[in-house]
Length: 285
Ligand SMILES: Cc1cc2nc3c(=O)[nH]c(=O)nc-3n(C[C@H](O)[C@H](O)[C@H](O)COP(=O)(O)OP(=O)(O)OC[C@H]3O[C@@H](n4cnc5c(N)ncnc54)[C@H](O)[C@@H]3O)c2cc1C
Image 1 (spheres, helix red, strand yellow):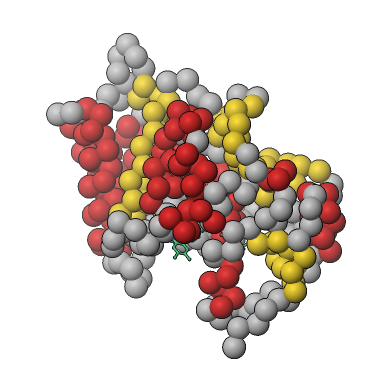
Image 2 (tube, rainbow, N blue to C red; image 1 turned 90 degrees about the vertical axis):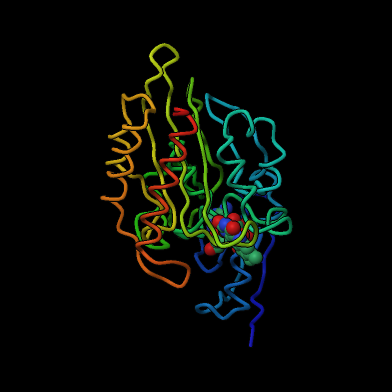
């Protein structure tokens, strides 16, 4: 039988921090993950819930201090509708468009996706590829954690129990290009089998790629960067032979698992094919 936990809905972030500091409440944003966990009996339900939905301090999309900043409560629909996101984080817009369907996109938040820490969370590879910074806060103040250090193990985050995720910063980088691709069973309401986010800085003169990031979801216990594939692309132009080397490197370094959604062999094969296609789209050979 589903249990309804006690809910507290503070109106200010300071109040929310004070409640979080007591350590007895589970935060809830849009509830699209947490409610499924509670009603589906996945793990023990929380006794108390800290409802974040009224906290306007956790909303808004803006460009500030050299970064695109998104409040933790930013919904996927807001990301899709944002001109700033379309200009500076098109891969995030593409990822948002693949999440669930309209109902989930209206209610589900970027912060919830980050904090749920699923290896299949579709925005997480994008945040890795764009070198995102996760700003967390509590009664003792704010601190910033790089995305590369935010998901240390399966469904774990680097946040402390007395902290909340406040906002996500995506540093603005000149000449950075970005791509996103999700492979699932259907076009909507599909949990991903493989997700790839690719980012690089293109040299306008030589056409070579710098600061290449290849990040993947659903192929390991956490979202990951593919270091060997990145090294194969770094400093190169997007030619067919470069793509082949990068694909071989990627397939060699991935260690996916077999599970209900897919097999390890399929994931490795598809990840390689998607990377080849993304590079080919740029090189047009
Ligand atoms: C039908 C359906 C389809 C879905 N499809 C997809 C999909 O295609 N791709 C995908 O990636 N996900 C999908 N999801 C999962 C879910 O919608 C997303 O992960 C969403 O981003 C969760 O956001 P939320 O605001 O609803 O999180 P919530 O359920 O409110 O919270 C999720 C977790 O994060 C914690 N949390 C939330 N906000 C904060 C904060 N600011 N600080 C600290 N902790 C916080 C909560 O305590 C909880 O542990 C789907 C879910 C459903 C039900």
